[in-house]
Amino acid sequence: MRLGKGEHVSKIDRWRWLVAVLAIVSLLGAACGDDDDGNGGNGDAGAQADVEEFPADTTMGEIQERGTLVAGVKYDVPPFGFKNPQTDEIEGFDVDISQEIADRLGVELDPIEAISDNRIPFLQDGTVDIVASTMTITTDRDVEINFSEPYYIAHGRILVPADSDVQGLDDLAGGSACTALGSTYEGLLKDEKNIDVQLPETYSECFELIQNGSVDAVVTDDVILTGMIIQDDTLQMVGEELTVEPYGIGVPEGDTEMQEFVNSVLAELFANGRYAEIYDDWVGQYTDTEATIPDMTLEEALELRPCEELC
Image (tube, rainbow, N blue to C red; front, side, top):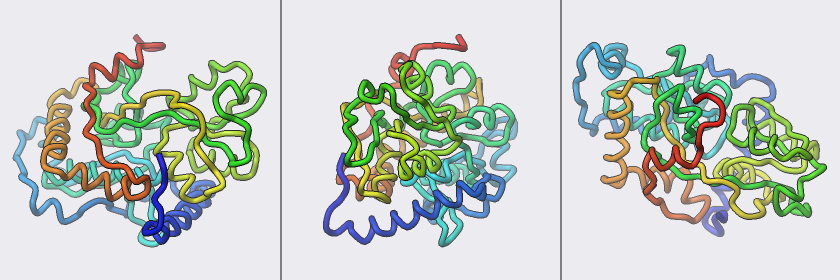
């Protein structure tokens, strides 16, 4: 994965400023998720979307009656979900995907903050209707919630300062690494007995830790690390891909009708080119990569992460 060149300079400068502000805001506790004035995504798409009326006793019907789709998204992980400090709107890849789901229901999108550690509880207690928050499909998580088919495939990587000698997990023995509490990397790093693992609630905190030298590396998905590099080009990803991370949209456990509806929206976005547009807007223009429709099924994604705790 590489960053854009030449024509992307102004965009990169904008991202650097945005991520810097986001890191400060997160550390001050301002991005708490209760203040959800923003409404990201393509607000005009709803006028063009085909809206189906659902029975009142379905989750989709309840959402239509309420008039809003509440989606749990990240507030500090550009380019997938972040709070724009200029507008207070919530923007990013996951936000636009959520907006498309809201548009198909003919309702407004209400994006609230869902960090790695509270995404599943938010679905379980009804705080959100869906979670689109860079969430990897795993069998353990699938015990507690339902997942859509994969809509994005990320990969685990290591982020280090440019002058670091670290090239892989083995090189972190005796050192320290940061990842977010509740992420799939928490277990991966804890299995490496000689690594001091730091587990803050947000990735913006990991970003500050690596910048001030408190940790030797950040370990997480490549798209999350890309956002950090855009702000600080003295950081770099190193080593081989550690893991395959298929992202799924979370819906409440047992709600197969909602699961099927979300899958139908994703299939439409894949087919009509809208997915590629969203990818280009939020990922492609910063990485010089083209959108690839995930060819992995939910069953195949679950096979990548067999049950470790809850089954």
